Image (cartoon, rainbow, N blue to C red; front, side, top):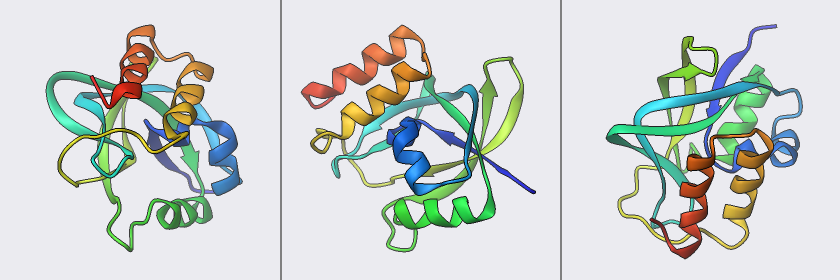
Length: 145
């Protein structure tokens, strides 16, 4: 079965949430999107933005075609909430691989929706993202760093 590699940097790092959305998905390893940083948009949801020298940490996940369609629905691609993009991420073993991500292009930063940041932090901690990444995510509890 063909899989799409998906880089999750937000609440989809939370295993319970992702398994409810994408029942046949498999978490593979940690990964980094270079030259980007994590943000909470003014809409209250996670995205990544270009940032010289930045690193957005997350998790690489294998999605089947039905998982990918389901994730498109949950991410509101048809409604314009998020757009799909393919980026190169670096796995924890140092391999550069192309991966699907979802990006929210709305301008500005703001506070996270209620309980949203907790799901992101749960996933980040469960997948043992670097402590500096977890600390950066925790900083969004006060509407961002």
